[in-house]
Image 1 (tube, rainbow, N blue to C red):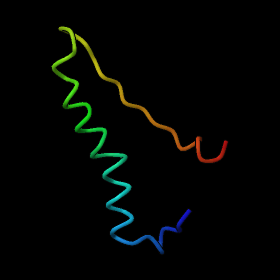
Image 2 (image 1 turned 30 degrees about the vertical axis):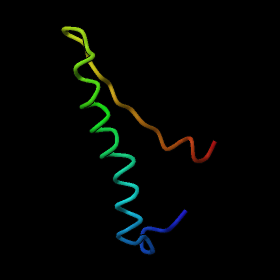
Image 3 (image 1 turned 90 degrees about the vertical axis):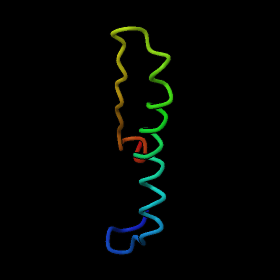
Image 4 (image 1 turned 90 degrees about the horizontal axis):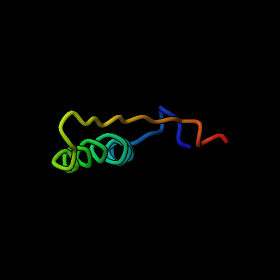
Amino acid sequence: MISFTETTEAQFDSLFNVHVKGVFFLTQALLPLLADGGRIVNFSTGLTRVS
């Protein structure tokens, strides 16, 4: 794990693309498949790194 002060812009962009941009566009792509009144709930945890 890289410390906050050592994180480069490229590393940050990579993390953002996976954890935010990826989820956003996946959700967008799946919206047409929802039935009327359907919902998407996104959740996450950092616990997988330490368990």
